[in-house]
Amino acid sequence: DAKTTQPPSMDCAEGRAANLPCNHSTISGNEYVYWYRQIHSQGPQYIIHGLKNNETNEMASLIITEDRKSSTLILPHATLRDTAVYYCIVRVAGKGAQKLVFGQGTRLTINP
Amino acid sequence: SAVISQKPSRDICQRGTSLTIQCQVDSQVTMMFWYRQQPGQSLTLIATANQGSEATYESGFVIDKFPISRPNLTFSTLTVSNMSPEDSSIYLCSVQLTSDTQYFGPGTRLTVL
Image (cartoon, rainbow over all chains, first blue to last red; front, side, top):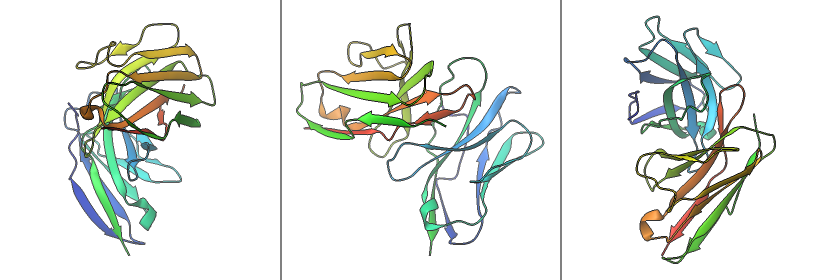
């Protein structure tokens, strides 16, 4: 079973910041938080991951709370092409093959 | 990242037949994975395929139904055997790079009539 909880759907206006929450209250100290998205049945696309510090790349920012029990993915200026299902996954890194356990994700719709 | 291709991109098959899906990556990787995504559902791992060893299957998936080959570090195949309409899904391969991040192929959309 997935170890994360996400809202099933969200809407955001084009050009605004999209903030996607994720709860992972049972996360272990050696588990990372990964975010992927899937655009209309394409293969999932890696977005970002982090352990405990906030992370930023060209796609998004990841904010992890101090107790690591929740996180927020931020798309700073959402476009219509960001409409997708977003998956938050916790996973141990650095110990060989570690499968990704996908939950149901959040269906984000960007509105013009 | 890695460039991953899958063949075929989609297929329509008759029940009782088998289909082999190919996954090719542009760099050598030790770990490859096969996932299934049934209509309207999330992804489920079928098996982990490491080069030089037998594939490791998840609960609910068996080698007779989903045989996997991993002949080298850039290629793998998944066969869906004796298909039924319940096998209609998107099948995806992924690779794990040394950065521990997994990257996914574009998927193979299978419809079984």
